[in-house]
Each structure stands twice: as structure tokens, then as C-alpha cells.
Length: 123
Image (cartoon, rainbow, N blue to C red; front, top):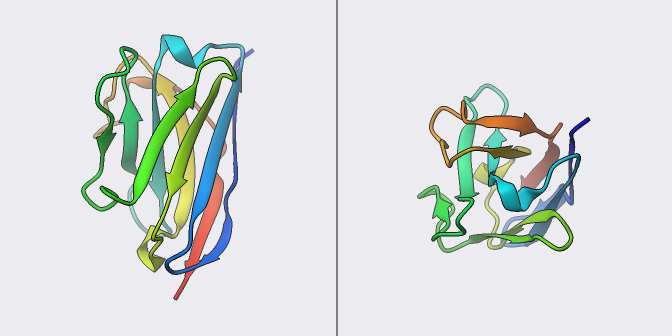
């Protein structure tokens, strides 16, 4: 049985930093494209960042470029999202997902999802 679990969310002031982590059991992140999505209340889910299976250049949403960094440690089977210079508009539930490709627009290529970790940025 596959289980994907995010951690590291919390409350932070604007300008602060957080690092999200995502671990999986029952699958190896090295075999998948892995991504972070987020969803704020009343808004549609959006892709934040993604790394392909071939570990090509990561993709970032324009809204987080230069502030967020995605990485993975295959030995630990863990995906990270380093978030710096956080803004109130970054407030959302953040989800980790694993799939066949970086289909960050629809998310349909991602079969495995975590339950999310809440990030709240105060102004």
C-alpha cells in the first residue's frame, strides 16, 4: 500500500522561510515525476513545482520562481520544498504528488497524493 505524507507546514511571518518534506512508503520517488501543488480556500489547485523522473530542470510556477526550491533525496525517498521570502498569498494547503510526468496543469498524471500540510503566512 502506497502512503505519501507531507510535513513541515506551519505559521510564519511574511518574509520568513519554511521547508516542506514529503516521504513515501510503498513507492520509490526515484521512479516518478514528483511535484508540489497547493490550494488556497476558494481557489483552484495549482502546481507549484515539479521534478521529472530524469531529474531535468525543475519547473516552477511564475509566482514562486526565485523564492522556492524543489529537491529530492532518493536515498531517503524524500521530496523537499524550500520556501523563502514567503508572502501572505502563499498561504495554502500544500500537497506532494508522484506521477508519470510533470503534468502540473491538470495533475492527472499524478496517481499518488498526500493529505497535505498547511502553510499560513501572516502579514
